[in-house]
Image (cartoon, rainbow over all chains, first blue to last red; front, top):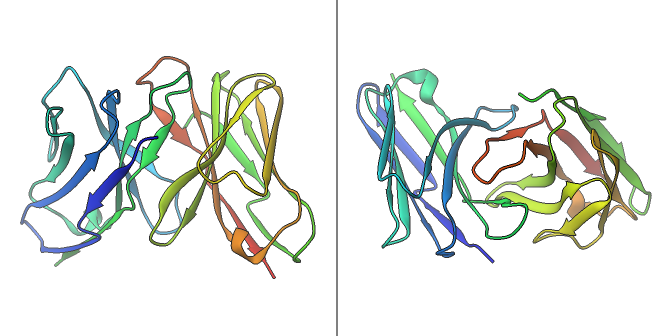
Length: 113
Length: 113
């Protein structure tokens, strides 16, 4: 099955700096790569996603890049703000009928004021 | 958030007792999933369903069973709860096509003592 590795597990940045989180996946048949943000005690919520026919996608301060050849994808957050502090999860869908998601182990991002 | 309701939201139970968690959705989504979340492991898939009475195992299915008798309800049963099943359980749903957004419920906190 799919295996998703995520790095780093913790990341601290100064407010206004950029943050980058990287993930690798194993299943070459994966073609959908979402990123979720989870605040303490809350549900994971989708912040951005990318499909395999696209190399990069941006939404305001958030961008995701995908390299299918190398099987890795990254989340970039620019001009970080304290409210960006949360746990971020990458995921990749699995081949098969349900296209279920396999998640990375998460990155705790702390934005220091 | 796809109208997903989980119940109970919090439960403390004793080792060896059966426990059932319920996920109810109002969006007529075809696919439903149960994940568990533990520190350092991210979200791991327990079971999933791709239609009424159609279910399959995820990566951590031992000790769990599921049922889906109606489109809107997906039940997760711990047949004989153990302390290792203390976790946060998230239900998730997806409309249908590959690459559709997966939405999460608010989570159920289960403690087995």
